[in-house]
Amino acid sequence: MVENTDKGKLIAFVDVVKDYDVFYSNLGNSVVISVFVLGFVALFSFVLSKKAVAPMVQAYEKQNAFITDASHELKTPLAIIKTSADVLEMESGESKWTGNIHKQVNRLNGLIGNLISLTKLEESDNLEKMDFPFQMY
Image (cartoon, rainbow, N blue to C red; front, side):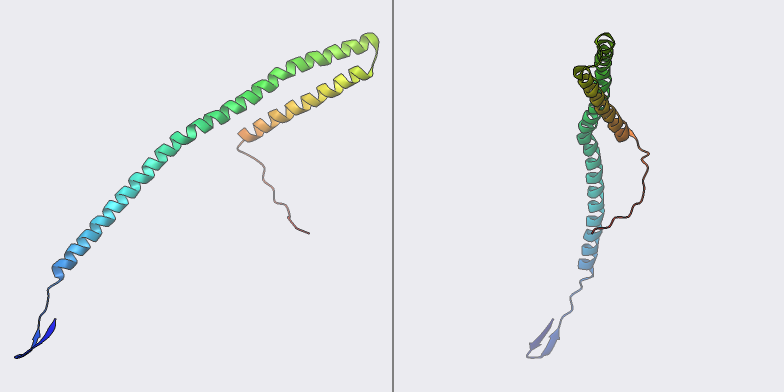
């Protein structure tokens, strides 16, 4: 600080070394505390995210099990219907009704096969990846 007095200029110096020491000490403590808190928050988030996702994973697994079980359970009645239609055709010959039965049974068997394939495809981790050209016209 510089001040003009009647005896001349008065110059005063202030020692701020202690202030800088306190500042850098507080800055270091703040960084350490921040790193600790960020680590704690990251760990806490990781643990809670696993708990939050667990019900969705269980629901997904149950859905896949249901699709697989339902597909297999539907195949048995379809096989019986197909066999019954075959027996009807042997006894009374082909008709448009037995043809429709065969057509719908084959359609349902195809849908069930697609469901099973889709479930297996979703469970598989080793999908074949291919490059293909993509051009917009």
